[in-house]
View (cartoon, rainbow, N blue to C red):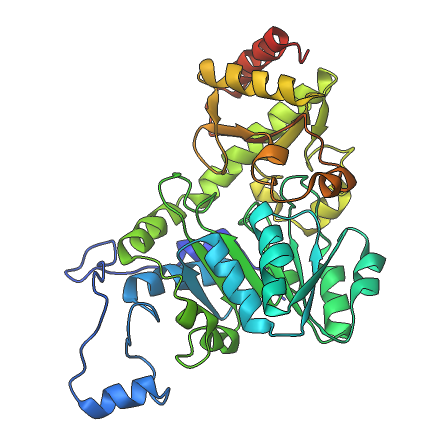
Length: 400
């Protein structure tokens, strides 16, 4: 079978604007007209396709973006959302109902963890959090009420790599959906090709790459996407995490350069990871040969895009972590800010920020210490210059 080429799939998309423009026209409308009353009845009744119903359901501009990302992930269809959490929560609530159970990775984005741990029990939906690099632990956590397995291709924030193919085999044996968050590794991993049923992204991060909007997307087979936007019981339709047409158009334009940006993010992150390791620091980066899942990633990634733009170092304690990040910001290396995928390097202490929803005892079990600094490495042209500036900050703050 011919190998899926995600960047080529984006490149091959070609839309025309209303007057022959090279960018698609923006459908800045919440509602759409019908020439006959019967047509409206058929559309709302699900008897007719090809007509727009209402922008909470679908809009030409959000449709263009959904199609482009669906092509990238090689799924039949996609639905965009107003945020990554809007995408994730819609998927979970579409699949699960009262009395159901989820098996999830314990090293996931803090917002996702909080939704599963604190919100879903209100709906009588329970979650077992396991170490998804331990396949036996996943299998042992499954019970008769389990409906899905949830993980991230590269975990936030510990950068563990999930064996999607092996996990999908477990899911298939038990007739479960495998939902995979691919936010950290667009283009680098193609989860659907490895057996994922549903792939989600926070478009806010690498895909958009400008830190100027929030957005999400759900990629899956056409049947599941149709279920999500069903007017009677579709989670996406009824919960309403609707992306604005103007934002969808903006993200679509940024998507076109994703292959260039991901390659540079990865190149720079690898360079810094190697240099930091040579300084004797404890570095977490899957491109390093001592990373526990380095070989797994090498055999399952699209190598041309590298090992990703995320890395983490352990400074030893929270005070040093804070001082280092403040020094780096003061020296214009980047920003002390959450999120990722920006052209400048972003750094944060995940235990006190993006993973703060996870209780401290759970963080300790995960291996997330208070001195850890997560870096989303930027697009710096001279990465050696950046390294020297970071090294000086490390010496100044006692990290070195």
